Length: 319
Image (cartoon, rainbow, N blue to C red; front, side, top):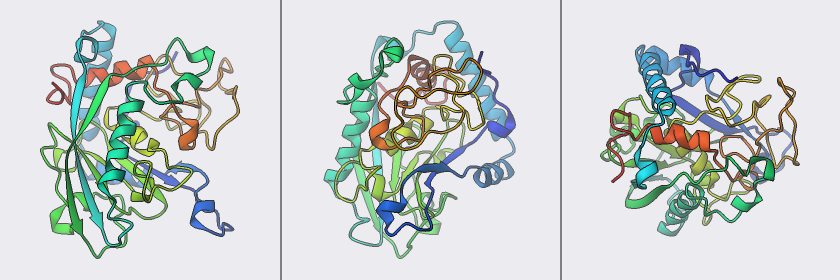
């Protein structure tokens, strides 16, 4: 039985998803062979900056569990959520100044992945066919804001969201999802803020090399799934391995994973955790290549739905 308690040490405001860089790799494309996560420094910084963060996230977790247990009738049951998206582009080079076409391609991927319209949805193995989910959330591009910069990289301390540090402040973050496209540095693909964090920094950051499916999008992360993964975090989803060996993602219908998976694992891939379950490596919240992830589960859908219920941390969103 998976744990459903959120401790202070796992109450991460920020997930920073990055690539391991091979020292012997001869090019950027060959070096970007696997995702990895460097969250500890970010966790410590956020908890030091805001000691009440863990408390707020525990409250959100308790609210989420309460809604799921009582079988809430949220808007994802009775009607779709439509989320306006603001894209903030910070660029120094022409490649970083991603086109409207590339931006729209990311919105299109989100709409497919969150509505079970992705072409690889039917590739979900029979074992998981009973829990694969149509989340029922629609994304609409609201506006694109562009700003030239002299910075070559932005890091993971939210500088891109702060005008006094050369960034762009989020637009109406309590009612609009803000995405930032900028070179983060350190091989990092992107990161997201969980519900419960400050509205001044709320949203998702994606490196332009992994934004959408055209233009500067860079294989093996060129199918827009970095955006899907990070928006999943923004909607309160954890990594599927729970950021611990045989950890919990706080979802009941996802198998317990040893740790993150990379590349495109051959099916079936067995866990050595209790019960040796087949791992759901094709879940968007694993660390596989873009081509290897293509489903959310019903349990993950319930977690996402709970944040939009009246009293939930993102109840102001949607229609």
